[in-house]
Image (cartoon, rainbow, N blue to C red; front, side, top):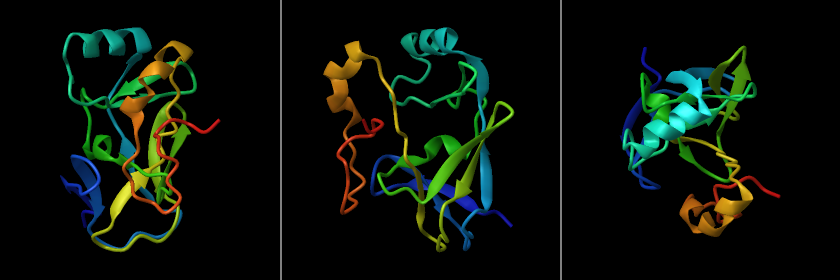
Length: 144
């Protein structure tokens, strides 16, 4: 039975929603896409491959998964400061696991914890969070 679906999100654009109850610790799916270098991914985005969205997921070895190319529904996971899912990297692959029990119909979220260069900090307004959590930190950027 299918566990999730992609549809319009009240938070931002599209989102991923549970179709059935998901248990804490359950592996929901893999974040898929073209595994490439940051240089290649940046070049593809500069050429307009996905101008409206960025679906890049950095790996610990310095490569990146480009969810805009060869991807699945995981690319539509939205950010929330109090996420109900987490991304786990294993052997160059990224899996999305539930952090807590999730009810059918509930939107799935991860904490993006984005890291940007000091030069790009001037554009930090582009990373405003709209999750609406009571203790929203106001940004999708990593804390501190």
